[in-house]
Image (cartoon, rainbow, N blue to C red):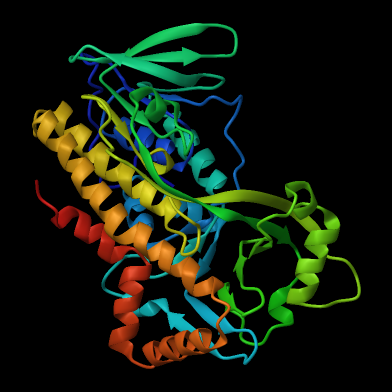
Length: 415
């Protein structure tokens, strides 16, 4: 594997400008750092924890995201660490009806007509390993960005390492520091939306469900008036996602007894399930009122928007934010774009697509999965069966669900 990424011209680092400062070494921050470093721009990536987080929540990489990651050399490194998914299905649990969507319909629209199931920590680790080859890129751990100030010509980030504070000057500050973003909070930017009353429980097990369910895909949305679930395969484990009772004690929801009862409802067996990990989390639908929170301070990823995980659009949307933003920063640094116009356009393009598509689509996904009306579920399943029976309708559905359409739409938005 070549160390120099194909398609990237080596550019001498812009040492006459302060570095771009990035808060948060998740997928969004790591991609931003790698993209900028590959384009010769000094960058410092700050992570508040002592090492890269091992976060298992996001694991789906959609086709346009794989296309973007391919441009920085990440996709070819992630594919061997993941599981290629060429179809996914909507399954009606009571009747056994299955609507299977074939992602080969996307041939010609993307270089990667499939999903890649690969835990997000594999992407961040790989990106940081690649960053090591760029002397103008630095990764700092135990260094959380807790605030900032601007003077119009630069931005100064306030860094806290647990013992003392430090100020670091940069040309831009990217807040990729998650849903509880200190940068967003410091800016006073509203984070409008809602938090759902129920939590989602995700458990991982090595039990081979594919040997016990007929025609199971690697990604399955299973509807049931009593209890819906998502069954998703990663390279070594099955991940099962279920809703939980609103008033239940979180400690009880994470207990062996509760998890066992949930999995036994999915598939009854004599021996207990072996659980590799369990996560309980709140689910939000929120969007920052602006992604440009200062003249040189931008939000991307979960710091800018959060949504429920049904459809796998959160991390993908964040990675797409980072790519769009960093393209514009590179153009600004190299004198190819006006700073204010370019950064305002980033906000317009990415926020519009988030509000009009990602938020609406994920809300619809949740409402569709959780309905307890058997007639509505049956109608939904009939609709999916009709779609997969029509190649053109199936392709159009896949263009939307894979986020190809929303990615293209974002670039069609002009100031």
